[in-house]
Length: 351
Image (tube, rainbow, N blue to C red):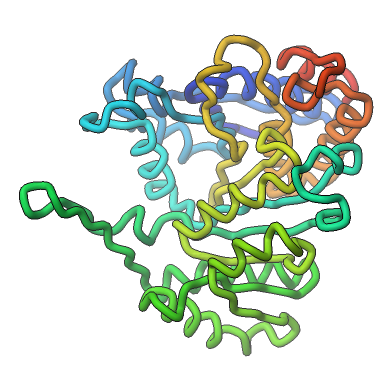
């Protein structure tokens, strides 16, 4: 198969972890006789520095004409620490999601047998955890009207959702639940927020279309508590943008490291695949960042391209690296640690 993949390294450790994912993908291409054409493009702070725009038109053209997008990370302290900055790396990410129609963020959370005791949570609480969040990505408070009043002393951000936005996200949730354990949880704050009441009402109306799926409805604060108490109670969870942003980061600690969790952002025609961690600028250029979340994001990419055997091969080699201790310093715990590039080389060689 011939594949065209947009490659967006981004900022901080993004280029380093992306480089390892490319090594792994190229090894997969050789093993399974595929041809991958990589199209590199700028985004985030790197794009601001180069052309003054965090998501240039040229980058959008590359992304929209590719089969998938593999993305590193964005963010830079010089923008984070400047409240007056008019252009920020994160604006590029939001614009990219909107222009590419990436409305569903898929974040799996699972445990690795060899790392189960590295989690801050007790083994008996998390063993066997395998859940997936679907976070709505292009609506809600991040995209609503905002501003300042009273000479800047009052600020407001507006959370707005349409029924259509909720239905398209919920439908992906129901479809995913049908492929898994047929259990779906709608996370909202319907006791307080009108937008959440629309979420709950819409999902309730859709239940009859999926009679085999058992649907539960929970408030976001209750889910935040139960995630670290009984994560095995959950399978597929759907929620709005802000709630999903917070809960998925909380869920990531179950595995023991944010450096292990992949994600996908999906629309109707194209998918973007990225690790859930940030740009970690303190580690940039030191060859110490954990590349496994990015590599596992590539596995999600292959799976969504209907190359399931290839995806499985990547997951298998990642599990082998963890079991054999071929890991970066964040997972070494005083033992031998490997450089980012060494882990990538090992993965590619063993594929």
